[in-house]
Length: 143
Image (cartoon, rainbow, N blue to C red; front, top):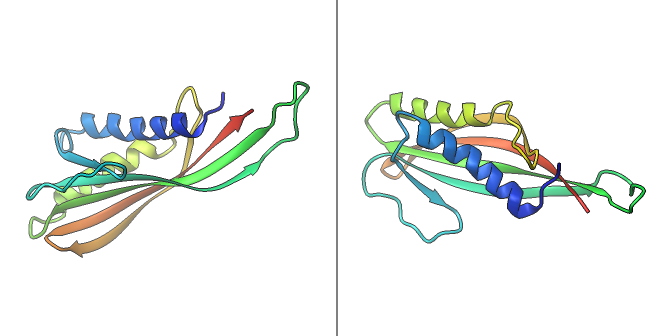
């Protein structure tokens, strides 16, 4: 199968949302999406999700009916914010939920493949402790 940009983004966000909503520590916590005008909650933990495309190329010549495969790549960024001075237990639990959601995952039907899932502890950000989880993705669009 293949995916267009909208389908790929929807599948990427669905992977995150399914894991986040199912997590004991993350269920019910606020999630901000980069395309919506939202403010973070004044207290408690929360997350921000961003999907950014970064590269694309033609991956094949045309087939017998003139279709070509175009490969698109990018990174999904999940920024996790937990209150300062509460230790790292919650930050680590939320980080693990997101990390495990993307590691080794391939979506269906668009076949978005996730690679290079990594954790970056940012540290203090205002009144929050911030940890970022990044996952590179790729998918093909055939047309």
